[in-house]
Image (tube, rainbow, N blue to C red; front, side, top):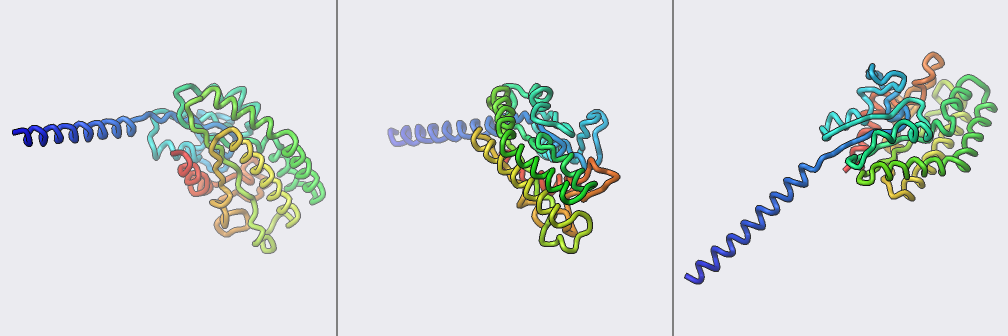
Length: 268
Protein backbone atom coordinates (compact mmCIF):
# COMPACT_ATOMS: atom_id res chain seq x y z
CA UNK A 1 0.00 0.00 0.00
CA UNK A 2 2.82 2.37 0.81
CA UNK A 3 4.25 1.82 -2.69
CA UNK A 4 0.85 2.67 -4.20
CA UNK A 5 0.59 5.83 -2.12
CA UNK A 6 4.05 6.94 -3.25
CA UNK A 7 3.15 6.16 -6.86
CA UNK A 8 -0.12 8.11 -6.80
CA UNK A 9 1.60 11.02 -5.02
CA UNK A 10 4.20 11.15 -7.80
CA UNK A 11 1.46 11.08 -10.43
CA UNK A 12 -0.31 13.97 -8.73
CA UNK A 13 2.92 16.01 -8.57
CA UNK A 14 3.70 15.39 -12.25
CA UNK A 15 0.12 16.16 -13.27
CA UNK A 16 0.12 19.37 -11.27
CA UNK A 17 3.42 20.46 -12.80
CA UNK A 18 2.15 19.67 -16.29
CA UNK A 19 -1.06 21.59 -15.67
CA UNK A 20 0.93 24.57 -14.39
CA UNK A 21 3.14 24.48 -17.49
CA UNK A 22 0.09 24.39 -19.80
CA UNK A 23 -1.51 27.27 -17.89
CA UNK A 24 1.70 29.33 -18.08
CA UNK A 25 2.08 28.60 -21.78
CA UNK A 26 -1.52 29.56 -22.47
CA UNK A 27 -1.12 32.78 -20.51
CA UNK A 28 2.04 33.61 -22.42
CA UNK A 29 0.34 32.91 -25.74
CA UNK A 30 -2.52 35.18 -24.71
CA UNK A 31 -0.31 38.14 -23.82
CA UNK A 32 -1.77 41.16 -25.64
CA UNK A 33 0.19 42.85 -28.42
CA UNK A 34 -0.60 46.53 -28.68
CA UNK A 35 1.24 47.84 -31.71
CA UNK A 36 1.82 51.48 -32.66
CA UNK A 37 3.55 52.50 -35.90
CA UNK A 38 5.29 55.86 -35.95
CA UNK A 39 7.40 57.72 -38.45
CA UNK A 40 7.55 59.18 -41.93
CA UNK A 41 6.52 58.25 -45.46
CA UNK A 42 8.52 55.01 -45.47
CA UNK A 43 6.25 53.80 -42.68
CA UNK A 44 3.05 55.42 -43.91
CA UNK A 45 3.53 53.74 -47.28
CA UNK A 46 3.97 56.58 -49.76
CA UNK A 47 4.58 55.00 -53.16
CA UNK A 48 2.72 51.77 -52.34
CA UNK A 49 -0.73 52.97 -53.47
CA UNK A 50 -4.06 51.90 -51.98
CA UNK A 51 -4.09 54.90 -49.64
CA UNK A 52 -6.45 55.00 -46.71
CA UNK A 53 -8.84 57.90 -47.30
CA UNK A 54 -9.14 58.78 -43.62
CA UNK A 55 -5.38 59.34 -43.35
CA UNK A 56 -5.59 62.48 -45.49
CA UNK A 57 -2.27 64.06 -46.40
CA UNK A 58 -0.39 61.51 -44.29
CA UNK A 59 -0.89 59.08 -47.19
CA UNK A 60 -1.09 55.92 -45.15
CA UNK A 61 -1.32 52.89 -47.39
CA UNK A 62 -3.10 49.61 -46.72
CA UNK A 63 0.02 48.06 -48.28
CA UNK A 64 2.49 49.68 -45.86
CA UNK A 65 4.46 47.23 -43.72
CA UNK A 66 2.74 48.19 -40.43
CA UNK A 67 -0.73 47.49 -41.86
CA UNK A 68 0.44 44.27 -43.44
CA UNK A 69 2.04 43.04 -40.22
CA UNK A 70 -1.12 43.89 -38.28
CA UNK A 71 -3.29 42.07 -40.83
CA UNK A 72 -1.12 38.97 -40.62
CA UNK A 73 -0.68 38.90 -36.83
CA UNK A 74 -3.98 40.26 -35.48
CA UNK A 75 -2.56 42.24 -32.56
CA UNK A 76 -4.88 43.19 -29.72
CA UNK A 77 -4.72 46.77 -30.96
CA UNK A 78 -3.04 48.58 -33.83
CA UNK A 79 -2.62 52.28 -34.54
CA UNK A 80 -0.54 53.87 -37.27
CA UNK A 81 0.40 57.48 -36.64
CA UNK A 82 3.03 57.46 -39.41
CA UNK A 83 2.72 60.41 -41.75
CA UNK A 84 4.24 61.52 -45.03
CA UNK A 85 6.78 64.28 -44.52
CA UNK A 86 7.13 63.70 -40.78
CA UNK A 87 10.24 64.94 -38.99
CA UNK A 88 11.46 64.13 -35.50
CA UNK A 89 9.64 67.26 -34.29
CA UNK A 90 6.40 65.97 -35.81
CA UNK A 91 6.79 62.62 -34.07
CA UNK A 92 7.22 64.42 -30.75
CA UNK A 93 4.36 66.86 -31.28
CA UNK A 94 1.71 64.67 -32.89
CA UNK A 95 2.63 60.98 -32.93
CA UNK A 96 3.92 59.84 -29.53
CA UNK A 97 0.51 60.70 -28.08
CA UNK A 98 -0.63 57.39 -29.62
CA UNK A 99 1.58 55.55 -27.12
CA UNK A 100 0.71 54.41 -23.61
CA UNK A 101 1.93 52.12 -20.87
CA UNK A 102 -0.07 49.32 -22.51
CA UNK A 103 1.83 49.64 -25.80
CA UNK A 104 3.99 46.56 -26.30
CA UNK A 105 5.41 47.09 -29.81
CA UNK A 106 6.53 50.21 -31.68
CA UNK A 107 8.04 50.61 -35.15
CA UNK A 108 9.53 53.78 -36.60
CA UNK A 109 11.40 55.18 -39.59
CA UNK A 110 12.52 58.76 -39.06
CA UNK A 111 15.36 61.14 -39.83
CA UNK A 112 15.27 61.46 -43.61
CA UNK A 113 13.08 64.55 -43.61
CA UNK A 114 15.12 66.21 -40.88
CA UNK A 115 18.12 65.87 -43.17
CA UNK A 116 16.12 67.40 -46.01
CA UNK A 117 16.42 64.38 -48.25
CA UNK A 118 13.20 65.19 -50.08
CA UNK A 119 14.57 68.53 -51.23
CA UNK A 120 17.99 66.98 -51.87
CA UNK A 121 16.44 64.44 -54.21
CA UNK A 122 14.45 67.11 -56.00
CA UNK A 123 17.67 69.06 -56.48
CA UNK A 124 19.40 66.01 -57.88
CA UNK A 125 16.50 65.31 -60.24
CA UNK A 126 15.93 68.86 -61.47
CA UNK A 127 19.37 70.51 -61.24
CA UNK A 128 22.98 69.95 -62.21
CA UNK A 129 25.33 67.35 -60.80
CA UNK A 130 27.29 70.03 -58.93
CA UNK A 131 24.07 71.26 -57.30
CA UNK A 132 23.19 67.68 -56.38
CA UNK A 133 26.58 67.01 -54.80
CA UNK A 134 26.41 70.27 -52.83
CA UNK A 135 22.93 69.42 -51.56
CA UNK A 136 24.00 65.94 -50.46
CA UNK A 137 27.10 67.36 -48.74
CA UNK A 138 24.96 69.85 -46.80
CA UNK A 139 22.64 67.04 -45.71
CA UNK A 140 25.59 64.93 -44.60
CA UNK A 141 26.91 67.83 -42.52
CA UNK A 142 23.55 68.08 -40.78
CA UNK A 143 23.41 64.32 -40.24
CA UNK A 144 26.85 64.32 -38.65
CA UNK A 145 26.29 67.33 -36.42
CA UNK A 146 22.61 67.56 -35.44
CA UNK A 147 20.52 64.52 -36.30
CA UNK A 148 21.75 62.29 -33.50
CA UNK A 149 20.39 64.60 -30.78
CA UNK A 150 17.01 64.73 -32.50
CA UNK A 151 16.83 60.95 -32.80
CA UNK A 152 17.75 60.57 -29.13
CA UNK A 153 14.91 62.91 -28.15
CA UNK A 154 12.42 60.83 -30.12
CA UNK A 155 13.59 57.46 -28.82
CA UNK A 156 13.71 58.71 -25.24
CA UNK A 157 10.17 60.08 -25.58
CA UNK A 158 8.97 56.72 -26.91
CA UNK A 159 10.52 54.94 -23.92
CA UNK A 160 8.96 57.41 -21.51
CA UNK A 161 5.49 57.09 -23.03
CA UNK A 162 5.64 53.35 -23.75
CA UNK A 163 7.96 51.92 -21.08
CA UNK A 164 6.85 48.33 -21.70
CA UNK A 165 7.24 48.36 -25.48
CA UNK A 166 9.78 46.78 -27.76
CA UNK A 167 10.92 49.53 -30.13
CA UNK A 168 12.04 48.53 -33.62
CA UNK A 169 13.92 51.29 -35.45
CA UNK A 170 14.13 50.65 -39.19
CA UNK A 171 16.47 52.44 -41.56
CA UNK A 172 16.38 53.35 -45.26
CA UNK A 173 17.55 51.30 -48.26
CA UNK A 174 20.31 52.36 -50.59
CA UNK A 175 18.67 53.87 -53.64
CA UNK A 176 20.81 52.65 -56.54
CA UNK A 177 22.49 49.44 -57.60
CA UNK A 178 25.76 51.00 -58.71
CA UNK A 179 26.84 47.83 -60.51
CA UNK A 180 24.08 48.58 -63.03
CA UNK A 181 24.52 52.36 -63.16
CA UNK A 182 26.32 52.36 -66.51
CA UNK A 183 23.26 50.90 -68.22
CA UNK A 184 20.66 52.90 -66.27
CA UNK A 185 19.00 56.03 -67.62
CA UNK A 186 18.44 59.08 -65.45
CA UNK A 187 20.85 60.70 -63.03
CA UNK A 188 24.59 60.70 -63.47
CA UNK A 189 26.72 58.09 -61.75
CA UNK A 190 28.17 60.86 -59.56
CA UNK A 191 24.68 61.81 -58.41
CA UNK A 192 23.87 58.21 -57.59
CA UNK A 193 27.08 57.60 -55.66
CA UNK A 194 26.42 60.72 -53.60
CA UNK A 195 22.80 59.78 -52.84
CA UNK A 196 23.79 56.25 -51.78
CA UNK A 197 26.53 57.69 -49.58
CA UNK A 198 24.08 60.08 -47.97
CA UNK A 199 21.68 57.22 -47.26
CA UNK A 200 24.49 55.22 -45.65
CA UNK A 201 25.46 58.18 -43.45
CA UNK A 202 21.84 58.55 -42.39
CA UNK A 203 21.51 54.84 -41.60
CA UNK A 204 24.73 54.85 -39.57
CA UNK A 205 23.45 57.59 -37.26
CA UNK A 206 20.07 55.86 -36.93
CA UNK A 207 21.81 52.62 -35.97
CA UNK A 208 23.92 54.30 -33.28
CA UNK A 209 20.90 56.08 -31.82
CA UNK A 210 18.88 52.86 -31.69
CA UNK A 211 21.66 50.87 -30.08
CA UNK A 212 22.57 53.52 -27.52
CA UNK A 213 18.91 53.82 -26.50
CA UNK A 214 18.67 50.01 -26.15
CA UNK A 215 16.18 49.69 -29.00
CA UNK A 216 16.22 47.15 -31.83
CA UNK A 217 17.86 48.34 -35.04
CA UNK A 218 16.46 46.70 -38.17
CA UNK A 219 18.57 47.19 -41.30
CA UNK A 220 16.65 46.86 -44.58
CA UNK A 221 19.59 47.43 -46.94
CA UNK A 222 20.49 43.77 -47.44
CA UNK A 223 16.85 42.89 -48.03
CA UNK A 224 16.64 45.50 -50.81
CA UNK A 225 19.95 44.43 -52.38
CA UNK A 226 19.31 43.47 -55.99
CA UNK A 227 16.02 45.35 -55.95
CA UNK A 228 17.26 48.93 -56.03
CA UNK A 229 16.81 51.49 -58.77
CA UNK A 230 18.62 50.30 -61.93
CA UNK A 231 17.74 46.66 -61.12
CA UNK A 232 15.20 44.98 -63.38
CA UNK A 233 13.03 44.07 -60.37
CA UNK A 234 13.30 47.30 -58.41
CA UNK A 235 11.30 47.73 -55.21
CA UNK A 236 11.88 51.49 -55.26
CA UNK A 237 10.27 54.11 -57.46
CA UNK A 238 12.81 55.69 -59.76
CA UNK A 239 12.92 59.38 -60.60
CA UNK A 240 9.61 60.72 -61.86
CA UNK A 241 9.34 64.49 -62.29
CA UNK A 242 5.57 64.11 -62.54
CA UNK A 243 5.36 62.23 -59.24
CA UNK A 244 8.20 63.63 -57.17
CA UNK A 245 6.58 62.60 -53.88
CA UNK A 246 6.73 58.91 -54.83
CA UNK A 247 10.27 59.04 -56.24
CA UNK A 248 12.77 57.06 -54.17
CA UNK A 249 10.01 55.50 -52.07
CA UNK A 250 9.28 51.77 -51.80
CA UNK A 251 6.74 50.31 -54.18
CA UNK A 252 4.08 47.95 -52.87
CA UNK A 253 6.63 45.15 -53.40
CA UNK A 254 9.20 47.16 -51.43
CA UNK A 255 6.84 47.35 -48.48
CA UNK A 256 5.77 43.70 -48.78
CA UNK A 257 9.10 42.06 -49.60
CA UNK A 258 11.53 44.65 -48.29
CA UNK A 259 10.28 46.25 -45.10
CA UNK A 260 7.72 43.70 -43.90
CA UNK A 261 10.03 40.65 -43.51
CA UNK A 262 12.72 42.74 -41.81
CA UNK A 263 10.24 44.18 -39.35
CA UNK A 264 8.57 40.81 -38.76
CA UNK A 265 11.94 39.20 -37.99
CA UNK A 266 12.60 41.83 -35.33
CA UNK A 267 9.12 42.27 -33.87
CA UNK A 268 9.14 39.11 -31.73
